[in-house]
Image (cartoon, rainbow, N blue to C red):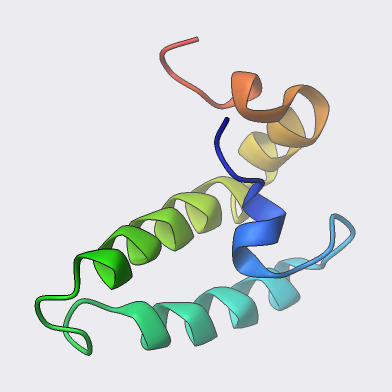
Length: 77
């Protein structure tokens, strides 16, 4: 099962949009492929962070995720 998006960004489910944005920027800087050349684990972590932010930063997608979990935002479901 995929990891919880809030867990990936290290924020609570009640986090504000600003808190989500700050957490994303901090983690994105840490795991960005340009800062970790050749590190496949950092690259994978960066992709997880990016995906979590894409969902949680969009009010509609976040609402669906909060309601239905990964099934609410999975295009393959």
